[in-house]
Amino acid sequence: MKIYQKSLAEMKKIVADYTQQTVDFKVEQAVSDILKNVRENGDQAVRDYEKQFDQVDLTDFQVPQEEIDASLDKISPELKAALELAKKNITSFHQMEVQQGFIDGQQPGIIRGQKITPLARVGLYVPGGTAAYPSTIMMSAIPAKIAGVKEIVMVTPPQKDGIKPAVLAAAKLAGVSTIYQVGGAQAVAALAYGTESIPKVDKIIGPGNIFVATAKKQVFGTVSIDMVAGPSEIGILADDSANPREIAADLLSQAEHDKRARAMLITNSEDFAKKVDAEVEKQLETLPRQEIARAAVNNRGFIAIMKNIPDMFALMNQVAPEHLEVQLPDAIQYLGAIQNAGSVFLGRYASEPLGDYVAGPNHVLPTGGTAMFSSPLGVYDFIKRTQFTQFDRAALQADLKAITTLARTEGLEAHARAVESRFPKED
Image (cartoon, rainbow, N blue to C red; front, side, top):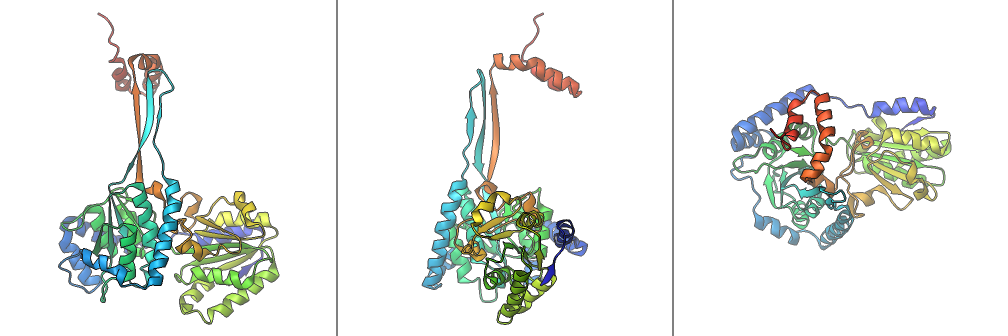
């Protein structure tokens, strides 16, 4: 891994390069063409793309319900128990996010308030092959169900040997309504615009490759999306009281996801930095996904040595990592120093994979520095807030002068007259 020992100002410039977002205009155009074709030609366009990209000739996109129901009997008891534990903890955590509307009637003649309404239908994109993670299905669908979403439509690329039972079982446990064997940008288009077979949704969630991410970005506005997710990231703040072997293992836990993943350690100890770097090299030798993880740590990983703990936090807040581990004594005391992070893991035994699977907090998180202004996926992502106002005659009359003054100041005479029409002058 690259090891830097520079000033805070210099390191802030360096980490800015790690969050630079690039646009592939060829991908943008290809995706735009796919979206247009699916919008205009529906099912037939989707079938054509599935034949072209996934080499399958589909007559029916929908996965039979009996196949979904049978999936729980096809997985091992250990996996079923793990999925059920994940469901229990994800549910208990996200139930605490449920929001209530409110009514304010404290002022005479005035009622103001806000009502909470769940989205009607949500689309969940699940990648195929090795990237099909049952845990992500649970993390995505369960908050939607808690929010009150009535219908969750899942799309996933068709597989030669059929969709993995683990994926179907997770969907079944999480409350997915319907599953369609469709992938890529064409699946996003089908969810955004609707086809003869696949219903239009209100929001599209879930990770995918660059074509899926680009498609989600382009349909935003027609539908809502969760986020445009980038490669996985882990940032670790640690001093020499931490175990180098454990820190190296945690860095590699995210590096193995993608060659573009970011694994970052910020410490105040040069000796500790060197020990962690050596451990990363040692552990890479026996890692099954060594090629992917090595590319990630060599190209996108770094260790930064700072003067003190405040500088460590200042730099990590600039990074705004998807996952942040604080491996410092009495880690929870530093919670207030964290400004920008997707999900925070405090102390030695809060290893990041705990959050990926069973802790309960969501693992669908902002990446690429977007934790500076974005939040983890939650129940609040599947609701709408609607305001309401009621005034009686006396209350409106009391505010009449203020309303008409502001309206005429802004040059909006009709606004002023609309309110004045409630109080006609006597002839």
